[in-house]
Image (cartoon, rainbow, N blue to C red; front, side, top):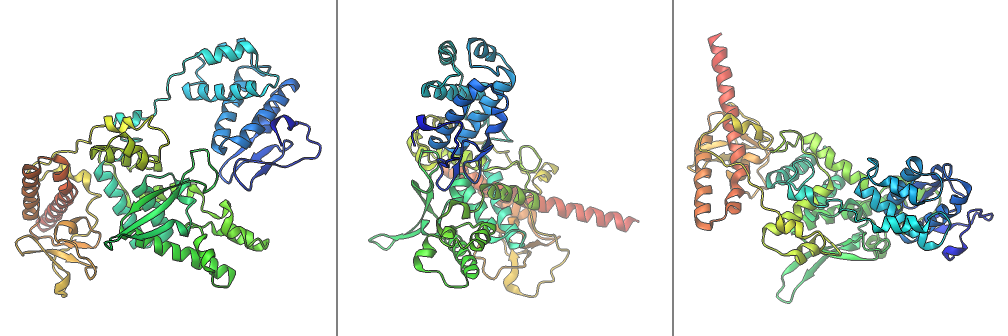
Length: 512
């Protein structure tokens, strides 16, 4: 059906396919459902417009719904809705657009969106936009919406995470999983968003066949995942970007894949075929599976976009981890404000910090253009707090880094679980050391299973780490390399602070 064939009074209530496969709407519908994440209420706007304007509006919306992404349609409709509610309910004329300038309701973003909507309307030839209004609004130079400002100013609430904040979140996700506070699925949602910097919608679109392992001629194994692209004008799973991952993440993804296959297998009461396994979503919406099976639409379980988990589940999982594990920002001293965009910013800044240029950054962030990648190149590395030799109360603000518990005496009989300092003196014990291959005692202080002794040689460990940090700096001349020890140093400092506090409390009790 061509755009010119669309009619407001669609007597046959013909269904029109939206841009997203599997979604249809009628011009007579009050609300158009354009995807599982987006819908637009056209009735609210139609109720305001006069009869002459309705034809142009509904047909422009129909064109946008067929040609543009659902998210874009929603923001464009929102901008026009704001215009007709506050500026003009009649046609888009010279007077109406002039009143836009300086109106506090219309910032640069809204103005840009409204201009796009009006240009489409005018270009389609429907009544409602005057020639003068069209010329005026296109003569405006609308400043950029300042994309990247939060990156350039290192915004502590919305900008890229520091190394400590990123590591703190990742460790919190693993702790929450080990404590059975989040599921494997939620852990993988968090890890993939954090590690790849991709949008939740992209990761939610992944299927089992997107997990790959390749072997080179010299038997070197490479682990890869295909992540669907979503902002390049293509449909559901039409375009991909390959991303290299570590074996540890690959193993966890495979574990999640097996779990998804098992869920569908149990619900279908049979084993899946090899092809069905390949097209099984990596992250499932179980309620949708039940809905399809109830209606005997088994094929939709494997091909429908709706069967994939909702992106909002990813966002909620990120926030849940911060709440459960009380992840504190080292800059704000409040709980870490987290969203997927901050991980994206973080990936970009870390790549730029390693000296890579705009092209590489654009590829790794899945940008189609290099318009904003220069922002990351201009970004200077975070200046983390310098550590003094003295152990002060200032370190208390890093208390979230140490997750273990101080023990008064050594009750551990298993010698394999005893953790010793650099000089062999026992610093504590570990509740779960059977499979850990860590280079003790350095990683132990940031591990939730570590139980440091009240009278352990923690200050000695602290001083040794400070010396090692200086030695690395002298050898490499690179602050970023030496700063890799900072998080452990903070944790050791917190152990020292807590031990001093416990000893002081005991001393006060004796005086009583």
